[in-house]
Image (cartoon, rainbow, N blue to C red; front, side, top):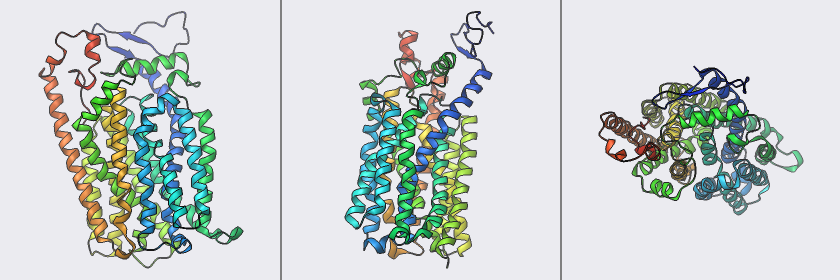
Length: 487
């Protein structure tokens, strides 16, 4: 190791190049950097997604406290109100990803968060179906840019070896939102009649106000990139840059938006197939998250408080499972094996829900479904961008993956129509089929990426860099023979 230069006696990182021009990074300094990044980035990111998810799905808890009756919802109007949010939600995802760098992440995320906090709060005072739909449409347009923006934001600070766990924190937030939503709904529901408002209105109003406050805080809290992060020293910023350059395919140029990369992303069959797998996973995520109270209520003769309490351990199981899986996935740099196995566990859970088994067995199916659904939705969101080192293509990949995946929010509410309760056999059967489909897709990618890596190891892709300089080869991104896919 080289000695620290006298002009920087407090330097926390050291970088040296071997004869192969590889970058060496002090592991102690790197661990200290990761701790600092997690301290400054993870809390606001988790809070943002927690409140986003809560504001999006609290309509499921409001239903238990008289929303349908008060607004005069009939037929499929409730399902329409749930699903219409996702029309504008998915329409705003890709455009948001393409402009977030231009408007600066801190400003863009703060704007959409504050705005949807206002809309979410005002949803509590709507008087009819039309007002509810109007609020849901606007809420979807504003919330749609958050998750894809956060996924791109995380890639600016973390390498692909650390990405799954940080994405995992977002899905843990979703699970916490599910548990917290049930607890809050039970407590706030007792405010029925306060100031002349029904309990379901207070649920929506009180859960919307913190989002507005957080949006204002994010303006000052989030840094736009490592170079503007006030909490990082110059040496820590250099360390982040070195960590990114250590990844094959990551160059200064690749971190910029290029039209050629955007077009390459739109033409890549792998991205589109990942999107289909994401659609299957998101269908069960939105069906489960919105209708779990309704599903559990159909399993036995329980009151509203008992139903809310029974949702909490299911979400807790999902959160714990995903955190453990994400940690091992980052540790081993394996995505497919965990995605496929937990996807099949989820399918077994839905098989139990479809079966005529006793209520206790079917409730156990809710646990199995929760164990798998966050994994089969979350890990691919870390898997796909890690195999696209160029920013433009990665942005398109993530945007499409989330847009098509979240379009599942449109049909998902219709899987659980009121008149098909209490067993909802059709909804559970379709969910089981979709999660099985997604598992098969990811199993196919497991085999394909492994085969491609073997071809690169055997030199069968070396023709791509013949006649190119070292710098030109680095610009090839995933097509560089030295770049190995994560699978």
